[in-house]
Image 1 (tube, rainbow, N blue to C red):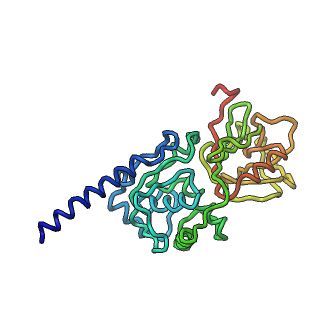
Image 2 (cartoon, one colour; image 1 turned 90 degrees about the vertical axis):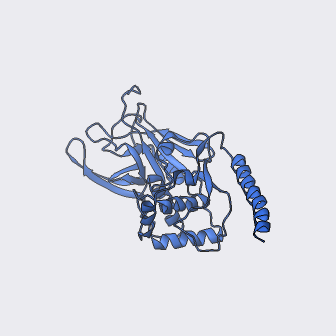
Image 3 (spheres, rainbow, N blue to C red; image 1 turned 30 degrees about the vertical axis):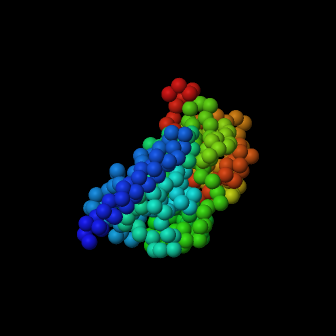
Length: 298
């Protein structure tokens, strides 16, 4: 009887191996843009996996539980890439946050901005993850703070079971500080969908470079503080305000010309352009600000 079982088992294993190989070969490459195929190739250590016991996950956390979080967020449309599971899982079962299903990542777009490629790490909670979590929280009436706590994870599992994908495409705001300064909005699958001249901070009040997340929005507000000259300022009825770093925000502001540094640290836009950017963005939208370059030469 043992010999019979072995004879039946070998063909089954061979067939399974062939199926896995075929699935690997058939994975879409998104025009050659692949993220590093198999999840077990970069699997975290056991010590990293123990971090899954933490009740709240945030920027800097690592482990297989973060990989699973990315799988769920991508499935719901909150990330600009797709996870291809070799063996699809039943969404009606409780989500196992400690073990990722076997599969591979691919980018959705071939023209992905370099900052997303540099920042993305499937094992680590980065600004990309934080932005995706904030977008999910905003969509589902949760407190928008970017932390993946127990309540957020329960809502993610419910959204998976009910197939509640986001209705908004993935977008990224990019601010180029090379003169003439420009702001553009990139959309996953479409490329740049909007661009305009802008003005960032003066050298004495520079706009913070790097990758940030929109965390506060006001359609109109009073802005006040101390300007680069050292004098206090107060401006009422500033429209379409989206804060992305401390007190720095994207907003509309009337000026004679745009394209060079002249603000107190914010990214200033013509009013009509600011309204359009407001419509294209939301809580959790990433904002990338380049290093300051003079006259476009660096």
